[in-house]
Amino acid sequence: MKLSLSISLISFSFCFFLLIASVSSEERASTPPRGWNSYDSFSWIISEEEFLQNAEILSQKLLAQGYEYAVVDYLWYRRKVPDAGADSLGFDMIDQWGRMMPDPDRWPSSSGGNGFTEVANKVHSMGLKFGIHVMRGISTQAVNDNSPILDTTTGRAYEESGRVWQAQDIALKEQTCAWMPNGFMSVNTDLGAGKAFLRSLYQQYASWGIDFIKNDCVFGADLNINEITYISEILKELDRPILYSLSPGTTATPDMAKAVSGLSNMYRITGDDWDTWADVAAHFDVARDFAAAKMIGSGGLLGTSWPDLDMLPLGWLTDPGSNEGPHRACRLTIQEQRTQVTLWSIVKSPLMFGGDLRNIDNTTFGLITNPTLLEINSYSSNNAEYPYLYGAYPNNRKLGRSRMNPTSREESEVEVLGLTSCKDPKASGWLVKELDQDLERICWKGNMEGRHGEPFCLSKRNSLVESDQETLHRSQYQGTLQLLASENAEFCLDASPGRKVTSSEFTRGSFSRCSWNANQMWEFHSNGTLTSSYSGQCAMRKIVKADDTASGARAWIATGRSGEIFLAYFNTNAIEMLIATHVSELGKALPGRNITSCTGKEIWTDTSYERPVTDTIATVVDSHDCALFVFNCN
Ligand SMILES: *[C@@H]1O[C@H](CO)[C@@H](O)[C@H](O)[C@H]1NC(C)=O
Ligand SMILES: *[C@@H]1O[C@H](CO)[C@@H](O)[C@H](O)[C@H]1NC(C)=O
Ligand SMILES: *[C@@H]1O[C@H](CO)[C@@H](O)[C@H](O)[C@H]1NC(C)=O
Image 1 (cartoon, protein in one colour):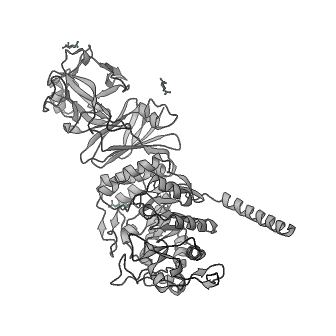
Image 2: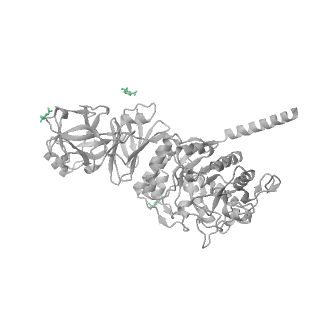
Image 3: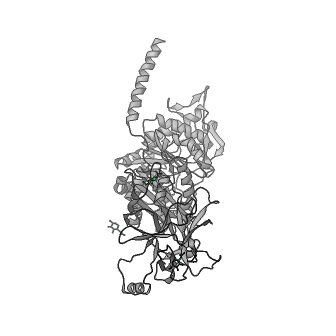
């Protein structure tokens, strides 16, 4: 009794020492992991030479920006022969214990049972970390061979209850991978032999020097919580810190994520992302839901875990599941690419570049190394979709200017500028707000209708450099002014004479691109009316029931390490759009902040906001494009 007590005390203090050692080592994935993955540019057919060429460039050009994981994606064990494809059976290299081994024709350094040891050494010598993709469970080929299972504690076949266990004892044949039914199936983790098999895989990966495992066909629609749970236990016990990444994310939900977050370091929350606008657009709602569920940067395997929006398919690519290497350029427009990197960054998704690095172009390089985006991606907090948006379509496609009620589309009301008779006492709601000599704003103060308390302001348009033609126009429209939707957006209030007047007094106004046009000219009178030079009618604000006006405008907000505010606008519509919010509403999205004024810049257009913005933050955003503001506010 005494003896065993002192032994356990010794082992306790030994464990305690290990605990201290692992506590003092850095927490895993403390920021969203970054790197390169071979799938988008090579599908499954990459060779050792091509992989190392990419790793070398990763190390030289991107490691300094935190891109540290070089990851080989699926089927590195499949022989590249004429009949082999992404779901063919019988072409894989497996060892005597039913474990996948790199195809020696594609990975020559793996010959003689070396596995990935040599590749890992080379990748490490470049200062990088090395990752591999693995599928769920066990391969059909190992099951067909009925391979014995390695017991890593004895180095011999696994025995229990007086018999040797084999692949067919642990395989769950009804749980094949739905998207690769010929390739892999789950193993029974209730059995000692099932556990021993998984242990034999992951101990081998660790012995090769692997730093990152992307475990596929275990999450989302393919959820296999038993396998994830047991692999996570194995990884915890290994002395090598291996990041654990789960895939794919088709139909993944925040509830599902809550079950795996603590067991992993990243997990996909959508299906595969390719270079189509539909794929990019499909990430907005999902990202919003995972942020709202507080899953971004929640507790993970020996550290932190991150919802993963998938690789960035930018630059030089191949096609999904093909037997062809990189051969074509990304099909997203530059606007769509900007939107993708901006969204991925502010959602704090891991950033895994997918294009062939040997052919990376400057634009793509600039996008994935943008310092503001990388700062946001690593160090921002309070990241969430931002709902307090106003939208406007130019040229009167729909409403003038609208306000979305973030909580319920059905019951939402919109704030619009309309026209009414200048004799209508309700038209006298305008005040001139003077900030300084150069800038005047005209704000609607009168007849505040209920809940929307913020002033609705328009800025006077001033041309700094006037052409002769403009001087001529100015004299033509003497005493009138043009009114911008906001200081930095060249969209002017427009009396829209082309529209049918559907009610006797009221029609919806609009903003259109500023031009010297009578329907953009207004006169301000001291009795608080704003008269259209074109129609003689007066502008006023009204609250009306919404149709879906600002839909398609999305925004995200986050705070930075130094208290700065990041605000991204996204236009998912097929036409350009004016997107706006009130400064006072930023505080609603940021706990404990009361915000009345901001200065800063928009990074994609390099527009400065040096003068404090106190009411509307508005800008025109191209179709599928985005704007990213960095503000200091108080
Ligand atoms: C890309 O950038 C490099 C380095 O700044 C420069 O030398 C090269 O001319 C650029 N290429 C293009 C196509 O802009
Ligand atoms: C405001 O002043 C203008 C110009 O004098 C006039 O035409 C208009 O009827 C006045 N409106 C009201 C409501 O007082
Ligand atoms: C925010 O600050 C303004 C100006 O100091 C003040 O009037 C307002 O009451 C504050 N609001 C909140 C919610 O603290």
